[in-house]
Length: 577
Image (cartoon, rainbow, N blue to C red; front, side, top):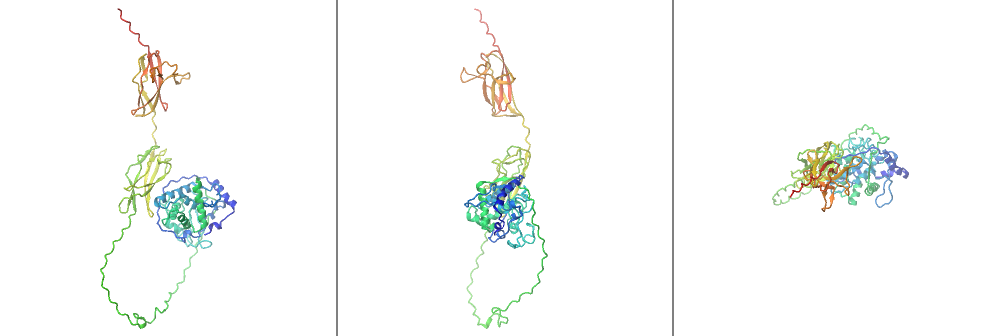
């Protein structure tokens, strides 16, 4: 196959493609549907329709997008054009989700999403120019040339036009350019919508991943990787191009950029189907006479009138062996169900009560131990409900000895809304999915914190102020462990309460580390009951007057306590002698 040779353009045209693509991207996309998979384990052969000369869908793209700059394969040197690692956000999400799904279904394959992305780049430039939408579909169909034998392989129609719109010959179709017969075997549902459509990049990416991994390949091995890509397109030039993009994505990373708008260019028309000609019936062929088929044998049981052989002496009969018992088929995945019926509901911004649990069962009724289960948040309208461990919207968990997989705990999004938590378990041929409706409710308006307790104290000079206790609470709930500061204050010229000067202050004080040390500020902390008790305020040698003590929390909740000091009573006169 030589599709890349056919469509080579000059270098300057190639260099312009990435700048033109970046300038055309305007629509952002985020799709968070869970992947599901289902396909057999058959090994594609080198002469399979998918690997034949099937042409290049990029011929339908405008010139600046049809032939993007191909980065060199590892070890060949050279630099790709700037921006070549940018991938439309929906395509990037689809490629990464294909890796998650295939890793759960076929963990030994080690499929890197960068391989699927590289194929998407070579096949359709990630559906750029066709109007890639947030849900993975495209505004315009992506179809390769007719496979009518005119410059490409000849493949008569196999799908009655269901996939490729052509009822006479097959065409490669969709962002990953599947041949209809290949898709019929490897079709997959990559976005959990119940459909398997290779025109949707989520479905196509998952189907491509399963196809690449078929036959028990380990794509971390260079030989298997090479074999997988050749099975997609039997061309060494194609392999080098795919590996070049794959290495580029792995080494330099990728940027998810807005989906490109649909291009203003025609798509190839569906051909008119000619009236089929009815073949003229032919008489059946007469069987010729041969030496081994004599027309008039003298004796059919003894051709050539030969002397018959004597009858052989019968051997003594042997006992008939007992039939062996058939080996029972190994148990397969048969069911996935939710454990428990607790509502999946929490206030906005808070944690859900616990992680949802799901049980996987085998066809023999036993638990599926070690079964991979993909758990994902879908259709989220809460502004970001997700797992507590990070920002990922899906995670693969394994079942325990009882066949139960426990999803990580969820944290509710910042606003009221709904979402779906979907768990999907699957093996190489089937999948089972359970969807649980979730809800985030509006967080009630937070009640203010209040500080309550004695506000006025009156004592004579020299009498310590004791027993002052204050409660910090939010509504009827005490606030435990809150820090408070108790400080002697006075009003400034502007009317604000400010701490007194410790060097010149004459008001009530707290005992310091020594008898001589006077403290006019004291740090406190509330207990489990939300209460804080002040140590004794000493008033010895304090002039009569009115003083103020301010209790202040970290969030600026305050309470002013007025302390009135009266003159010490005159000492009683000494008794007369």
